[in-house]
Image: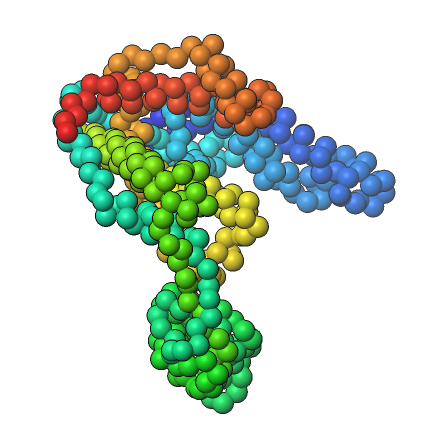
Length: 427
């Protein structure tokens, strides 16, 4: 194997010419023959015992070429690419340009690599931090939410249904006078004003009284998941069995004792204010850091190939799928529920992916400029921490993440610290 030449196509693409010599090609052919002969039947020979030359005479000299060349991609081409020290960000585009038993195989390989990056003035970035004041209204909203959580539903008999009530209904849906599947239920508890049902459904229950039977007319949304109903006018026959409203507890010390670990309303309010102030400070810190890295991105000069953003989106989608699977769901079901296709779903991650890629490139360059080095011992210590965190053997974590990747992550973390520690944050 030899790397014959390297030609720069643009800032992120290189064309490599890689040659596997005749001996390597012959070895690959022989190994392919040995793997394949048990599947080849030739009259006069037991299965798997036909000589290679006999097979090549019957089926052509190149009968084993394709599999042999594919094997060379792993044994010859991949090591040659690794020796270039280029950091690939996409699968290489590999083509065979010549193939000859006496001369070997020549490959044309186009690789996409990380872009060249320039960045300056990354120290002393000025950012304003804004911490929002906690108001009495904020406390009141917290307390009201606590009362809502501890409220109880009581039956209402002396008035019609209102927004905010829970209507207990029997219903059945019809399209063109025919009941449709999934459009029927009994004693269904529907929170009026919640937007749970299709537009117009809940609004037509408001004003009705317990015991009333009536018909409502609605049109299903154009993007409704059941295609046969999407955009179609339908009617529902309704019986209003019961109206319930939420009765909130009185706001006093007794309620506070029952619902919280505090004895008085004043103690509860004081604790709420403290926690809201802590949350406001944390939010302000996060926003300031976000502004800091947005400013850092503006200082980045790089021609970033689209594939880097797509790779990051792929990663985000995989993470999302893993979280779905923990809830017993899959991507197909989720997309059906949300009336999205995969292209629309991926688009949700676009902005975040672009930002993460750019920040990472900036910090990697800063790590180079600052000559940040990470020892094997430091990386091994980090792997041990990860193993303890995820309750996995150290060897397993090392095989999954790789020592080189951990070292790079630690370099990036140190570069991030340099940017944040040097930043001038006011407010």
